[in-house]
Length: 335
Image (cartoon, rainbow, N blue to C red):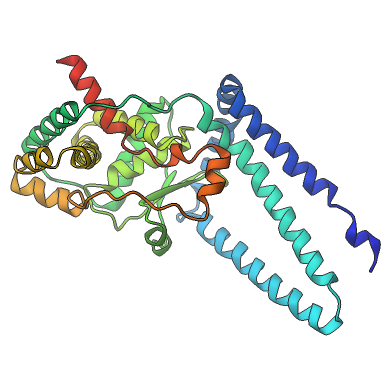
């Protein structure tokens, strides 16, 4: 075998090392992470968003499909060439290409998303059961009195875009948040929306309940603005939606109620039942459409959890309930 095929891929390893070093620095020095987000991550995300917003569908989807297709085709072709030539060189060449692709993705992830997790925005305090119950009662009373009228998908995305722009103090490009073309993959991984930092696109499942869609879209736009932690993104989206008023405010209250009721049910079933009996008929229907009455079950650890723990971001991806605890404590402090 030619010895050049056995040489270590120095440029690829150097790229992986650079990405890893940046991630470690952001994790150890929050001030550096905040500066990187302000000076690099947000400007690049804004540029990507302006470019991809011109396309009426999320380009992240066809790019992912094309990448997976090329990987699968390359593997089959390499195996076939190994069989014909009776040599392992084609497979080694393929593996080097895969490693090069992974190194590029890691470097892009390290530069364009990972630092945002370490900017100190995670919300840690936890509310008491009594505070959660008081929050649920306040939200239910407000939603009982609010008209249950939500726009269609296209109008909901436009409303969310305006609310996020007002919150950020800048005009986000029209089309910054898009409905996915193939929502089946979102159903498979049990998500309602996702932000793709590689393309600067906020994506949502337009088949969501009309009551849930405005807040979900605004939540994904908070990721575009550089808020990575899921709990912090919920809090930012809630503030943006409440400031916008109307259907956005009602959607935000419904999401907050869903988070708070799930937390309350886990701690006090009788208090949860008392809160459900407080809901009006229209609110019961809206809340049910959002699966609000479905008991929250802990998501089992998957194969990727070990990697997420190693990166230190597993908790940032799980704590959606931070919004409920923040509002419950705020209400308790105001009373």
